[in-house]
Image 1 (tube, rainbow, N blue to C red):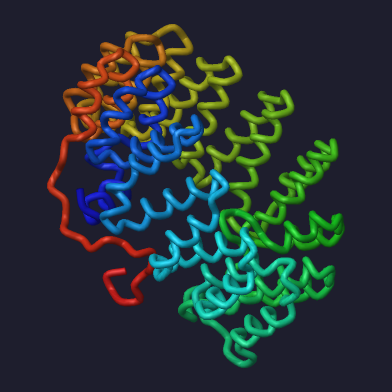
Image 2 (cartoon, rainbow, N blue to C red):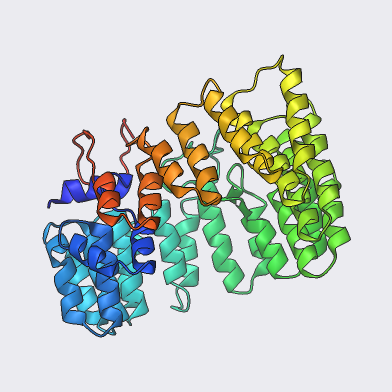
Length: 451
C-alpha cells in the first residue's frame, strides 16, 4: 500500500471497490467482506468500516482500520481520521493530527474550518487570509469569518483585489481570485451585515461570472429578501436563464403555478435560455399533473431548428414513458428517423428500448438492440444490461456485460453482488489496467501546462 496507488485508485475509482458498491455490500449483509477488504488496501471499505465501528463505540478498532492508510502520508486518509475523531468529540486530537498536513489548498481549507468549529477562529482566519489569492481559500475565509467581527477588514482585503481600471476580456483573464468572484464574496459579507442594497449594487457590477453551478448569486439574494419585482426585472435580462429559474421556483413555492409557467413562457434573448427554459417548463408542468402539456412543450422544442439534440429527445421520450404514452414516443422516433434518411445512431436508438418495454415488446427491443450496428459496443451492453436487470433478468444482464469487461466493471459487479456472487464481483472490480505514473495530488492545482 502506498500513497500514489491509493490516490490513483480513489480518484479514478478503478481497480477498487467504489463507495456505492461498498454501501450495497453492507445493505445486503456482507459486512464480513467489507471488513476483509478493508484490511487488504481497499480504501473505501476501510473508511466505511471504520465509521461503522465508531458508531458502535469501538473507536480504538476504528482507528486501527485506517492507521495503515494514514501511515502512507496520503491526505484523504488523514482527513478521514480527523473527521472520525471530531465526530467522537475528540476535536483537539483531530486538530493535532491535521495540522502537519495543512499545506495544500484542500488540506488547508479543511484544517481552517476544523479550527473555526472548535474555538480557534482567529488562527483559522490568519491561515486563510494568507491564501486569499486563491478563490477557493478566499471563499472559505468569508464563510469561516462569520460572527468574528472582522467583516469590514476581510471585505477590504477582497476589495483590494478588484482592480479599479482593469477590465477583463474574458472569465479567465485574471488568475487566482478573479474580480467577479471577489465582488461576489464582498457582496456576501455585505448581505450578512444587513447592507442589502450595497450587496445588490455590487453584484450588478460583475462582468462575466454571474452564475456558478446553475445558481445566480444576485437572483438568490433577491429571492431571500423578497425583492420579487427586482428579481423579475433581473430575470428579464439575465441571459443564462438562471434568474428566471429562481423566480419561477419562488412563485411555484408560493402556490402561484401559473405565474411560474408565465416566467418560462417568456422568450429569452439567447438560444441557451430558450432551450433550457422550455425543459424547465416541461418539468414544472409534469410536476403539477399536466403531462400532456409538458410533452407538447418538449415536442415543439425538439421540432424547432436544431432542437432534436439527443438530450432533448431523451427528455421527451422519458415524458412519453412516464405518462403512459410509449406508443406515441415510438412514433415520434420513427418520424425523426425518417427525417434522417433512415439512419438512427445509438444515442437515439437506445431511447426506443424503454418505450418498447413499456409496450410489452421487451424481447423485440433486445433483438433490435443486438442487431443495431453499434449493438456490440460496451456502451450498448451497458444499456441492454440495465434493461434486462430492470425486468428481473439479472443473469442475462451479467452475460451481456461479461463480454465487455472491464469497460463495464462497476455495472457488472453490481449485478454480481445482487446475485450473491460476492467474490466474483470483487475480482472484477480489482482487475488492474496499466495506469500512468503520476504524482500524488496534494490539493493544489498547477498554473503550468499540462493543467
